[in-house]
Image (cartoon, rainbow, N blue to C red; front, side, top):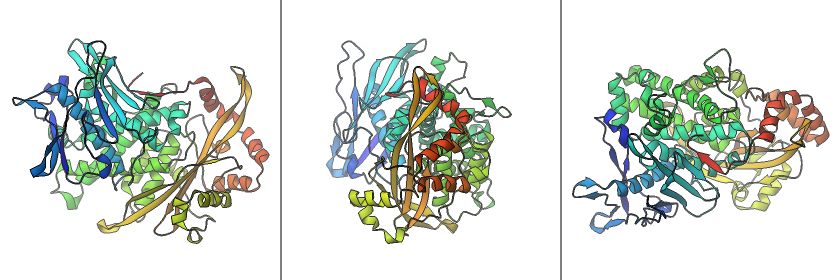
Length: 558
């Protein structure tokens, strides 16, 4: 049964600035996923449930939309019009559901993760509450398994965060990322939160690529020059205009920025503000997108290709790099470099024969320019390993947990696991594509194994009566199931090798072998002694982990 949905594309109170753009767009799904069905009242399905509350005390639920089945057409839709005009209460309900489902599909497609995303809170549906409360924010809460889309009054009228496609996509991305990398929510330091905010902002940008009339409008307005199209990188225009009193034009945050960790380039990000730190990452990825769009649109063999198509192609490449990189990240406490490294690694796997690798070079250029890494060599990796994949039953590795446990024990040193107390996550099996030369693509089936453990770190000076902290480390192993070969091993077991002063956590082959040698000697004392020589470089990390509180969820802004 096909379904036909609609969603709001422009914040209502700023749509007069975009007179040529349709404020509502339809979305047809010709081959619905089984997990999406059945559609129920709300709207809802087994994974997402929309709940709308009255704006009058005691905030009782208002009637949700019922699906309308068109048997003759084999289609399900929702009626949001009355006498030819939209009922905006019903339209908001449908729009939020449509955007949430569309964002899920963006992540799960074979050109991205290639698998179903599981919520961090289990099999129950994610609740998205429209008009949750009168508050200048929108929030995701894991423990409540809900997203709260609030509303507030302004001089320009009542602002509904549920009417902003950017905000809805942003909050849904928080829930999705919490399912992919749940440790980010549990890590009490700024970088993990910054990763959440950057990925959520970029997800809102990727959604805009699905609104061809919006991108076409901006491309026409600026004659195809996206570097001048400031609006293209704006997040939450209507909301931002009200919250910043016009200081930032009409946006909450801008992806088109020059935030960095360096003193000699751009605007130095506030190390105590994870929203600013997030813009180092999102700004780097956004600029890489602009560079790839310019290369794609100026290609001699693609002169007949529309600017809109060039942007769509460039956007899909960037989206694939980011989303696939999320699966490659190690578990435990990670930072911006860990994700940047994972993005590059995942892209090398996706494009093994890409000699020019232009888009990857653009990304590296931005990461280095903004101080996320020192040089290209920081992002090099070597898949030479003693793990004998061809001797392993990969079907059992995925299906038999005892077999997986024995595998981890056998190759503990190769995976940089320093002791016997560790936790193995249920392995992930995905189905996606590897892209070769001349437009050829081949099936890629990955087995992703994640292992985590805790290590104790003594503090040189007690902070708030604490003389030690426990840091969660982890390793991610990626195996090509079809070719029986290791694609990637990434670990955060390199605390002594990191420079926490400025997010330049670097591990090259020689450093990898040094830690590996210490692990093979099974000498925790030697590892700790090695770590202690670099404690002065860990001061930034230690203070953050001790002084920051643990979060229960994420809001749109402070």
